[in-house]
Image (cartoon, rainbow, N blue to C red; front, side, top):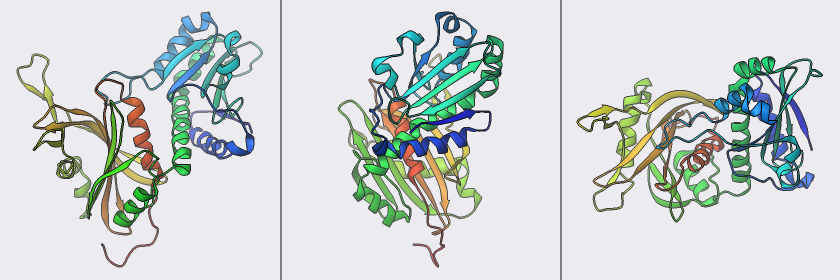
Length: 349
């Protein structure tokens, strides 16, 4: 199956829908599996374009840094080849972006094709009659192009979670918080109580984890940044550190450049919409009280109208030797598997 769409400024939702369709037809299409690493894009263009303004514009878009990571990591790792090198296994790369500048093209646009030589694959073609029109298009639609690639990677995670999830954790979270969720394979329960559940996926040199918690909704004041940070610290204390008496905390200040004082560092706080429901996203850093350990976190908070409770899923990464991007991104995607009951219960739990 091959789906073709045009990307315009406000069409990322349409492309997301098209991508979901392609990801759900992998078995029937019998496509070869994709190659390449997550958050890697293969750019196909000639040397003149890559070394000129178009290449610089594409790098500015694709390699802009991910927010709130300990090290500077790009949104996408970019590999560049010429059209003559696009053959064999490279044809099966997960994310391909072709650049076509030709006077035979009438207008600048990006065409998206799904599952061309592998699945689940996206092949984007930036085509324009000349360099200037291509640059103008990227200046206007660059963020939409980036969003399409991000959504495509997210859809891959969601498709995997749909097929390979941890039923024990799904059921425990459902019974405890009255939500539906798909926790991808690999996560194991670490601890739980009436209003709290902690799970993690442990690697030899890294750890992906999340904890869910709930508390009564008492108006908009329970959703302010200060309140959410306070509640996060309250529940994060239940996650022990490596030594006795140590536990997770939220970083709210860092040493200044001279090492003589401290500077405030607040988590990023903003509203986002996930599956049609409004959430509050917070991005920041966590640390361990009474020990040396830390990393980035992202949390998503909303109100469960069925229980009149605030619900939070808080995702964290510990990876002191390697990058954090490819650990934090799949954690973020778990929030996109969550759905809430439509009916309102007669009373809270």
